[in-house]
Length: 425
Image 1 (tube, rainbow, N blue to C red):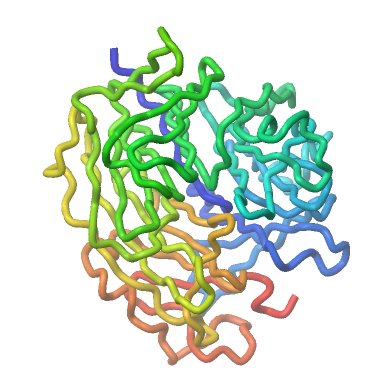
Image 2 (tube, rainbow, N blue to C red; image 1 turned 180 degrees about the horizontal axis):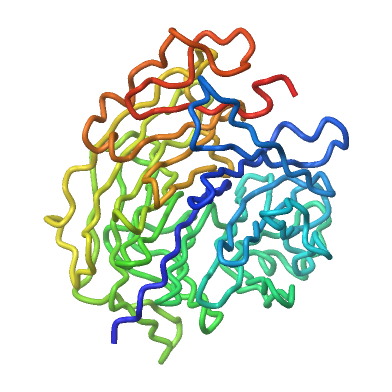
């Protein structure tokens, strides 16, 4: 029997509440000026920043650990914030969205030896995704290389879940280092992105706390970004090489009858499609499970290369047993223009800050400097991709933005929201 859909709208690094039309954006290089602690900007995404001041305030944590990711439990009005990277290990803060105050006991320490930032040659970044089926936060972890208190190398790298009611963590499921991941709660599949042998990747059986393998000839060596359409069970994977992979998880099942554990695809292998001709460093991904489209954005892998490419991939609108290629039209591609200060766009990608508002069909991404949040109207992107690349107007300036060269709205589907650092505080 095909599992009933459990809709998950994933974010990367930041999160958007479609009902409230608010974006919660970690200010990675701009701590609270009074306390020095980490903070999150609250942006009203329903207003035109050329006319109305969009910053609704900030949420200041009780500590200065680097925020790696935010997820939203919309039913309970909880923001789930992961942080670390400075010697305290990995932490989870639960913040009441209405009061903007932390839940008693925050921050909660992850299992000993686990962190969410790792500054090394084989660096990775921990993320969090809310699982509405189990009512837990699924968190990717890394060995804490600052305290060096993991029991053995690699033992603290993998996945844990955090119960939002009991505040308890599960033992870590060991996997290779990950850059990001996506969750399909109906099939119990977690897809971690990392460095792999082409055609083979690690996957996690969340229900049985097991790491398994998936073999598919369309899997790339360095997949960095992924998001799953939780209503059709199709994943969009950014391969960081001018290609993407659409992977069909419908009908897949874990075979643990003999080691090693393996995820067997439904249909015929490969039950996937490789998509070509995309911007070179396309990695960040967020799927709208209502429109069944995947928004993708380039990573900033080289400060001298201004990777401003974006893409929109239309997936099948209903579950299909087999992907053959004909179900997916040619992706729509465009490029982001200069920001309001007149500088090239560079994506915040370590970790990514990408999200989709599945109600209003808008995508969001932040720049490397942390000054701006870009909003892309995906309906307009679909019909007029050239319009997204239109420069911001010079007729007006961003509301209260000092000495801005350009405005914040190109009137063709792109709006730029200044974050607090752009205002000098």
